[in-house]
Image (cartoon, each protein chain N blue to C red):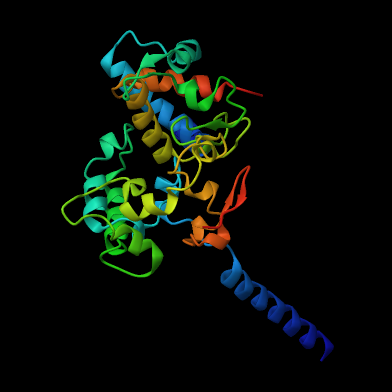
Amino acid sequence: MKKSILLLAAISLFAADTIFQKLFSPKEPTLYQKECGSCHFAYQPQLLPKRSWQKMMANLEDHFGTDATLDPSDHKTIAAYLYANAADVRPKGEMSEMALSMPKDKTLLRITELPKFKKEHRKIPERYIEQKAVKSLSNCAACHRDAKRGLYEEENILIPGYGRWED
Amino acid sequence: MKTLTLTLITTLALASPIDLYLEELAAQAKAKDPNFSGFSAKRGEQIFTSYHIGKRGKRIACISCHTKDLTKPGENIFTGKKIEPLSPKANPKRLQDIKNVKKWLRRNFKDVYKREGTPQEKGDVLLYIINQGG
């Protein structure tokens, strides 16, 4: 009787641990995060409209001056992911709002050139952007501490050498 | 015959992915140049550390991002993103995923040399990287 109880307890603990691990472990980085996040922050697809992602994916040989080409299978997977989650395909939340501020007759590639982006960042003193810990406005995660989770609210901003930001 | 088969199987079993890729590159290099007599880490060092006018029209070298010490982390000079050490002795994950190795060799040769590396150049560079650190 005792042995069976012990065995049952062991199995239950093991099962519970496995379930716990699956629910709460950090997710495996997606292919997009792994490939595109290897050189810079993995900008969420909602930050640009579909046409921008299409233009970008068609020109990876000259991706802002660098060769960022992918193997055909990875290219297909990443493109599909970006297009399916682009701002105008899945308009939801602050990120898409920012992307959709793009003039309809333009296809901008830089998130930093979006009208709403410029507006939100216009008051930041240059020195906080140019400092080594940040380098440029393209480096979202340097100040937006929850950027990886797609959260860009003011409460989550901590500028290196400055502190919290209140507008 | 038995000995040969056994040797072959053993070699395949023990060879790491990077060894197999280097053999592949050696075969390609030999096909291009019958006088090819093996890769050289010295040539690889030259390729890796020399500066050239790169894709962006600016002076650049592999060491611009990877630094001269491959056992230390580097930094993407354009984005500031940290790059893990390239030396397999310091970072055992390196040179294990050949798909990854091929991708970065293609991209980074184009960034610095504005063209793909030849099989010999790729082999030279890989041998140089393998020998770093420790």
